[in-house]
Image: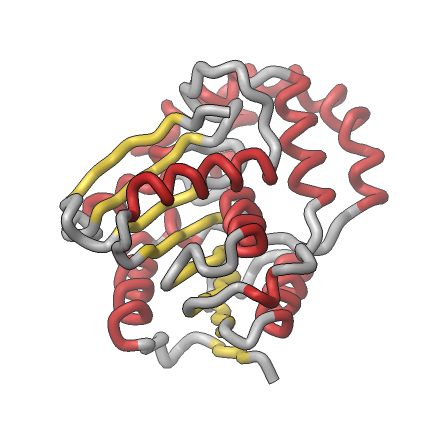
Length: 261
């Protein structure tokens, strides 16, 4: 697997790696790239996502291993910060389990770590019913709304989502729904922030608690009045939260914070 990526910022500064979610691609981090321009930022495009034109098939483990190799190449002894959202957050959890000391700071946003074995059996019939709809703009707008994708990014989202292949969609959903907490995640070092939206599904909230309880280096935070997509819905708030946490360990007073107890 050879992963496609974009590189921004100051190569002399700390390395920040941004891992996008399923169904979107590197563009979801544009507001973060602008804000963190004083860092050395790398934004991979996951296999079978966006405009990635390689022939590699997506898997969480495969992407984790490839991104670890990319970080080894780019970090050169610098401080490493990794941010992952949804599917990208699952990849980050896998990375921390493969190489526990890979990051000084990890931000895990909306990662499901509770396998849905029953739902996995329904993926193929559900995709068979819904797949023809992806060509329609109205359907993409409904999907985009759940991820807080506004007009600025809708055309890119629609173009990419309407081009996805049926087998690719099934493969990504199966990887996502079968992902469980890796046994070596408790070994992960560095500081780990686990983030979830107050309006997210109970599965996401329970997964956030599972992650925090599994590793003493984790601290969890519930972002009020938001669902699945904090970085896109509230980029300024998200960016400042991340920076203050990295620099001073400070989290907003309005957030519910939970720890490994």
